Amino acid sequence: MTHDVRWPTDNKFLNGPFAPWGAESEGYDLEVAGQIPEDLAGALFRISSNPRFMPRNADRYHWWEGDGMVAGVYLRDGKAAYKTSWVLTDSMKFEVQQGEAVYSGFVNGGTPAVLPKGAPPAKNVANTMVGVFDDHLLVYFEGGLPYSMHPGTLETHGSYDFHGGIDTLCTAHYKIDPVTGDMLFFAAMGPSITWYVADVRTGRIKDTHTFDMGVPALMHDYTVTENYAVFMVAPNMFRTDLIPTGKPVVVWDPAALPHGTQIVLMHRTTHEVTWHEVGGQYAPTHFANAYEVGGEVVINFHRITRLGTPVGEHTPVGSHEWFPPAYPWQCRVNTGTGKVTDRRICGLAGEFPKINDAFTGKPYRYGYFATTRAQAPHLMSDGLARHDYDTDATTVIDGPGELTSPSEPVFVPRANAKSEDDGYLLALWWDQSTGLSELLIHDAADLRAQPLARVKLPVRVPFGFHGSWADQEVLDRASAAG
Image (cartoon, rainbow, N blue to C red; front, side, top):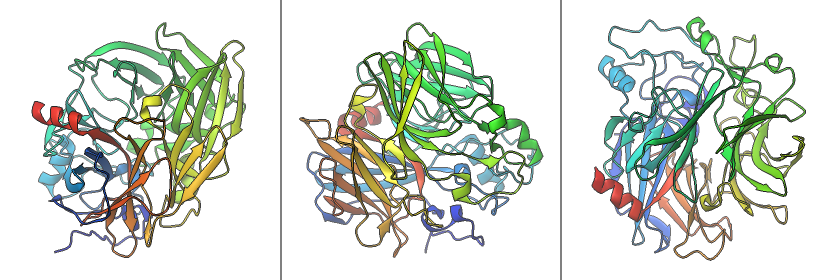
């Protein structure tokens, strides 16, 4: 019996590497080509965007709207096992009871739904990020509370609110302070941003501050330095007021920011907020890192010319028009004068930038990302890149054989690492010939097309957003906590 779901639509986000996989599964002692490094012990957790039921408006369905399914690939003693499980949010449980999709799409609009009696008022798709904190495997979606799962069994425990510290939602893009281990994150609701710090020892909120953006900008990612939280307010709007109308909710509206995109620095101690004009209108997709040097805040991120449906348009646009190629960029904010200077890092289109997380908020040398060079009609990503900021050199690799569409790479340091890039890059790739997924393990310091190991999964993990690594000590402690 196949669990390879194929619905009657040519929508890119329901086919190819995005095509849904219709069942939970697990497997042990997986086939491996090459050799898994002996010091690589722990789990790679990936979240996929995997609609459980055929969307109400399949032709308008957008990748951001798929249900969350967590894939855990467990590595130890040179062997691999895996498990996949749905994130059983309250809204998913209700749709399972109904046996069909109940909620309408929001990104591209759709037929407004009249919710059946007893349905949660909004859908929590729990599909954006997954990682261990406070001995919970937490799954994040920016439109609701995170959900907690057991990191070993992947059983869903329920929503998680940082012991009563948050009430409605939080970002999927948290940062971990490399000095304290605390979680640094925010919540975006309409024009308001609320900053939070969660204590690594207790999981409780120890600092918070709210400020006004002035517009309901889509605030997906941010970054931090030693002293600042760094946000970027751009013309990509999240118009929740349009949901009842069935019109696209994620819209590109330059008129909403006549002065252009702005960088917002919030001091992490004093909470002082300063605004800095970048001199144009564009949007960030994801941030690689930021740090302070010589009176400047240096911000590395991927930048896009626009994001979303043009304001006033009601018909969905093509995926590459909705989300054009993003390029690595750098802005430098002079904290004395407030002036911003910028430059493009390289001419290689790409997404999902990652670093060695031990260098979060600090000066660093190496960054990694998934390339989007070809803008193929059925793909998003098509290779991996490593950028050396000291030499401005970029190394690019394709997948071996028929492998393409790599996920966001995750950096895992070697045991007793001796340098910033002394570690491994882990990413899931899609095999065009089989329709299944593989975990590829590369040497981060010597990025080559032929990986150290190819772990072959007997499933497809539909192309998703983000993931993280938990080493064996963290995994064991969280598993024991239940």
